[in-house]
Image 1 (cartoon, helix red, strand yellow):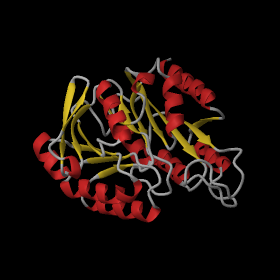
Image 2: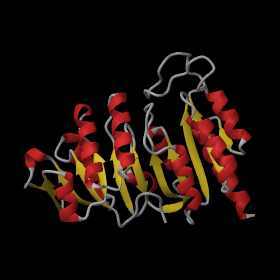
Image 3: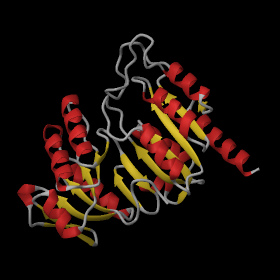
Image 4: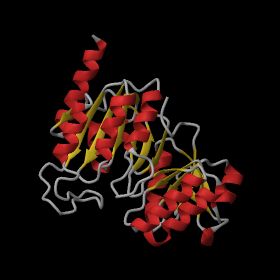
Length: 296
């Protein structure tokens, strides 16, 4: 099994004909993703050859969905046009929109998140690496070769690079799905959404939660774990050495006074029974210990 993305998912790429869209569409296809369409109003009617796969370009999302049955959109549209692209996908009835674009203004993100929610479209991102269900499908920019085989771990992370590192360090165990939710102040799919999905997934035995300084998402996730999650959860929080008031990497990763600190997040998670590593490598070790204990 997997969450949100399966081998049956049919993917269209908004911005496919741009440099980043072309590069990552090729990578998605190489990893087995069923990319069925690109969308670019200026290049409608063209066909783009990716090695042995020819992908048609449509003028709009609704047209692409009608012609191909696409149910997932991956958005590589530049920041000034990303809001319109996501709203177009939501208007067309896409089930899942994966917004890779970085640098989208917060007020645009707020607007398209609300718009999509009203129309039943799940948003992952923005400013995220996307998600992968190894051996099934890969929507975004996660390198598929770091954990090529499906496995027993579900991963949800604010950080793209930490997603990659944990997947690499635990590649011998493998992942049911790994979801990079993004590190902007406003994101669509949350830690809690992923925890709920992994809790229901019969093939996920353990959940890894990666958070970072800023906001209270991890504290809210801890409260949810206490009430609703029965599977073991291992966590990692990035930013213990971050100086107060300085944005660290992601737009949402900023500590203000006592709010949003790594220590506060760690304490909340540990109070919920989550073992929290001090480094990514220690986090990997904790995962192995929890899985081994469950097998005894």
